[in-house]
Amino acid sequence: MVSAVFHTTPSLAPASDSPAAAAASKPAAAPAAPAAAVKAPQPERQPFDWRGLALQVLPPILGMALLIGVWALATQNSTAFPTPAKTWDAAVKLFSDPFYRNGPNDQGIGWNILNSLQRVALGFGLAALVGIPLGFMLGRFSFLSHMVNPLISLLRPVSPLAWLPIGLLVFKSANPAAIWTIFICSIWPMVINTAVGVQRVPQDYLNVARVLNLSEWKVITKILFPSVLPYMLTGVRLSVGTAWLVIVAAEMLTGGVGIGFWVWDEWNNLNVQHIIIAIFVIGIVGLLLEQALVAIAKRFSFDD
Image 1 (cartoon, rainbow, N blue to C red):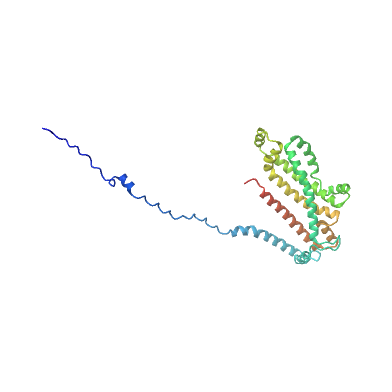
Image 2: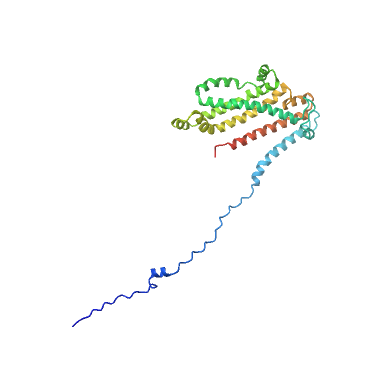
C-alpha cells in the first residue's frame, strides 16, 4: 500500500495581515502640528518703593528745614545777623549775574568759584601725580617705607597755612604759593592710603606672580592696581576735601580772585549776608566734588 504524504505549505498571510508590514504599508503619518508656543511667564512688576524714596528724601529736607527754623528764631530780633529771608533775597540778586566783571577786584561769584576750582585742580592733580606712585613704592618696598614713614609722620600734622609762607618765599607770587599749599596738604592721604592698600594685597597673589616670573610692571598693573584701587580712591576723596578746605584759607591771605578772597572782601565790607551765602556755596561745591569721586569709585570698582 502506497501511502502518500501530502506536505501542505503554510499559507502566506497577506502583507496587510502582519503588524510590521501593516505599519510599513500605512502611509507616513503627518508630523504633529507644533504645540502653541508657551509664553514665558512675565516677571511680576514690583510696585514702586515710595517708602524707600521717602526715607531718602524726607530726612535731608527735614534737617534743612530745622536749620532754617532755628536760624529764623535766633535772628528774629537781631539787627547784626541777617535772617533767612534777607539772605535768600541777597542770594537771588547775587546769582542773577554771577559772571559780571567790573575790574580785577570786583568780579561775580561765579568767577571766584571757577578760579578757586582751577587752583584746586592744579594742586590736587600734582599731588595725585606724585602721591599715588610714591604710595605704590612705599607699599611695595619695605626699606623705602621705613625710610620715608618718619618724614610723613613729621610733616603730615603741619597746619596748611604754615606752608604758605614757604610757597611765597620760593615762588614770589600768590597764585603758585596757593597751589603749592594745596599740593603739600593733599598729598598725604593719597600716599598713606595707597601704601596701606599695597601692603594688604594677599601674599598668595604675589607668590603666583613670582612663580610666573611676571615683570614688576605687570605685577603693578595686573595684581596690585585692582586690589589697591578702593584704598587709592579713598585717599583721593580725602585729598580733594582737604584741598577745597585749604584753598579758602590760602586765598584769604594771598588775595586775588577766589572764593576765599571774596569771603574776606565781603567781611571788610561788613556784608554778612554774602558771607553766609559763601559758606553755603563752599559746602555745596565740596559736596559735589565728593559725590563725583564716589561715582567714579563705583564706576571703577572691581567688586562685581
